[in-house]
Length: 261
Image (tube, rainbow, N blue to C red; front, side):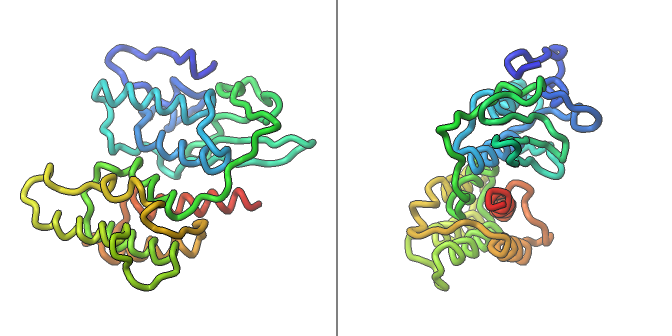
């Protein structure tokens, strides 16, 4: 079954993962959510250099948009538990791409030809096309504008963004006009705002993060750990947002590990 031929669910039901992919169990019953799709887009961009037509992200975005429009999911909803992955292996001279959600494989294909008759076996990459390079800290911050863009900036977000800026630029102080300075200003103003619509959102601060950083570097596990600690320490409940700054940097670091193998 291809993603262009989704099984149409009952009118009053959301499009679930089982309607889009050949998956079983708990995952099959979950509605496809916007943040899930954004995470898969980020993973595909990191490894393939772009979101490929016919791959998982394109189908997930389409299903998530329909679910959100119908009111089955919210823009901030995340229904993936352990995350999404796009991995590559080399076998018999071919680059094999495997996409998974919650550790369950949803598609596998090679650059030259489909490997399976699964739901996304038509997703191909030509021999001339190369994969994407490592994901930078700036790109991870910009990804947060997609995964949690409508979240008002809080002190925990500002702290995580500052930690990310320090690691990306090598500077120990906040850059005037930089992304960390903008985040701190937004958190201060949001703390005083009386109405939700008056608050500055993460997308307002992070949409052009790479440009505002000035210098950048590939995200590493050590970077991810530092950003996560900063977010945790400044959150009243000592937790991190599931699709927030530290989650994006962690995802970027994990994908970079996969690319380097």
